[in-house]
Length: 149
Image 1 (cartoon, rainbow, N blue to C red):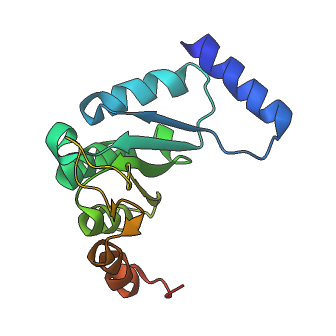
Image 2 (cartoon, rainbow, N blue to C red):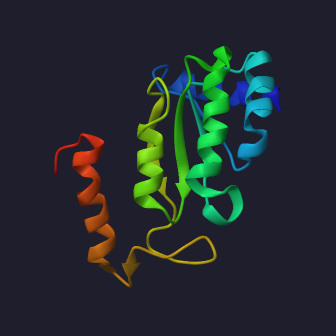
């Protein structure tokens, strides 16, 4: 696995050496040991992400614990964190990332906004945005210290 990760990183950096390298796992409970293995074996990681679905990973609470364990390990001091997929819990997840100790949280990415499923509801009905879902993002802007767009 280490050989494949490093080969992929080499390929990406051959195209553009400024691209940040992000790795992601859907298993917060083993994230620290997995990332420790990767970093200790020479893989240069810039950003690390955890899937944070309520049903499978315990949502913001489960992921907060995993991120805090990562933050506590000095080997990861130069690594930023993201939630590359989650649903539901938009406000809770965004605030959790904002509140990570020492500010390594870059942000969140809502999974599949155009289609709902066992992972959670969609933010669109057909081709129409559900206004209340998008209003939730607008409502949290001041709390996140962001300006309206």
